[in-house]
Amino acid sequence: MKTLWLTGIMTALLACAAPASASASTADEQALMARVQGFYGWVLKNGTQVSKLQPAIKDIPGSNKFQLDTKNIKVFSGKFMASGYFSPEFPAAIERYYGKYQQQFAAYTPAEFAQMAKDGRGPLMDTEDMDIFFCGQEYEYKKSFISKMKARNIKLDGDKASMIVVSPYQWETEFRFARINSNSQWMITGYCVFQ
Figure 1 (cartoon, rainbow, N blue to C red):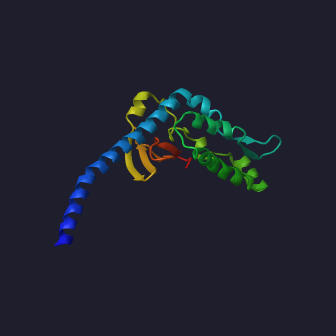
Figure 2: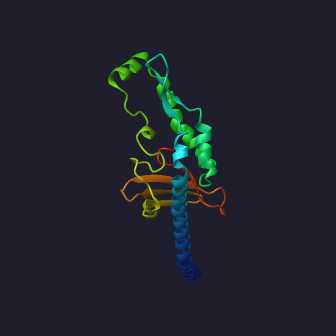
Figure 3: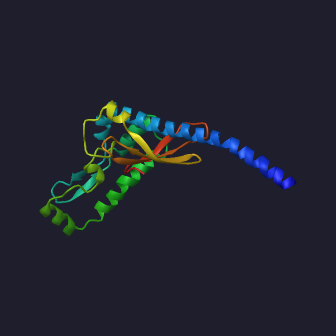
């Protein structure tokens, strides 16, 4: 009888607690989307300047070889950090992305460079063929475009979260987030190719 009584009380307590958990999730979901839209608002003001700093493939004079020029990578990632939307983990995501290609290009043989010089070189990195912020083909992005973005597949796991952001053109971009401590805002740890 005592066990039955305790089970009833536990069931009632859990039922009362459920709405509070759901509202906290709703608040987190809104905070995640606000963080993404805030970042994109920053992009509208700063994106042109920041994109000029991104690592790019440069030809090596006097040869048919090329390399990834990363001399501005710290300044590039520093601009993201200065926006106030990114976690301290984010520069490592940028370095991982470009580091992968740096190693790949360094491993090309002279024959591979010669073949690319003969055939013509297309884009070798995703970032050569897309807008690095909106992760799609370049269009004229405006506040109205950003305000129409929708969230999908939001996953919350303690101080970590992920969300798919769907643009008005139906492009999907994954964002990942973290909180440094339980009282802090959600910060972006990675998005698009920078994971």
